[in-house]
Amino acid sequence: MNVVLDSVPAFPDRENEDFVAAAPGAAVLLDGAGVGVGDSTGCTHGVAWFSGTLGALILRSITAAPVRPLSECLANAILAVRAMHADTCDTAHPASPASTVVAVRVSERTTEYLLLGDSSLLLATQDGTVTNFTDRRLDEIGAAFRGGMDRLPTGSAEHTVALAAYRARLSEHRNRPGGYWVASNDPEVGTHALTGTVPTGTLASLTLMSDGASRLVDRFCLDDWSGAVALVRDDGPRALIQRVRDAEASDPDGRRWPRGKSRDDASVLHWRLG
Image 1 (cartoon, helix red, strand yellow):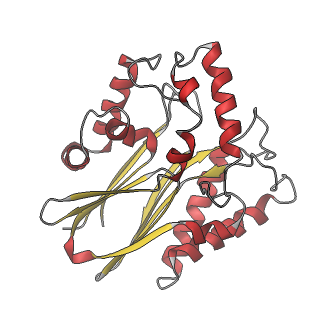
Image 2: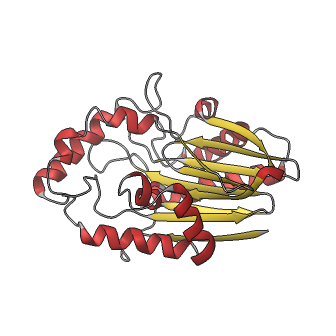
């Protein structure tokens, strides 16, 4: 199994709310988030605990049941996590910790994938074509509400207020028909995930990225998906993450690239198949 991965918190003194891991025949990447008003989430454990615990259980479910659909693996993992903290936390809280999910299962014949939220999966074929798969529903909903926030310097007092208002508006559309879907406490979200299957023999590699890493391409426009895959393949995930950090450092207040956070946790997993 030829896999390299890396995950770096936004700042060294803060918890990393991403989770990325691989096992024989499977890989997962989660980007945790507390989406809602203020700091209250109803959970005493926190976002990093949620994404890490859920990610580990999804990976276990994928590998333990090779024929179980990925959506069912996700649902089973959500149920297990919910049971683990239902007695101590308000699992019905509207801002309960949540996470994006990218999950893949690779067999000799087929590669299955599942996406929920705005993390990315890049499939590179043997002929050099790279295709990006991302669940863009969160971006599409958010575009209607972020204009005022994006006009303000990132990190300023005004931007902080606008960011809280933006998150509050997003929470009204979280895990609802016509909105966007992320993993939280409802196992039914798995039925809304984007899923697919491709022949493994056509693939050279697959790459999983949290949006803190994919922003090199989809927000900063400093490379394309083929270039990003080549960078990770040749120099490793840390090289791509460093390019993101350099770009963030060059634009700390978001004047060139408006964004909710000046820096974000960044995770990359690259799996060479061919």
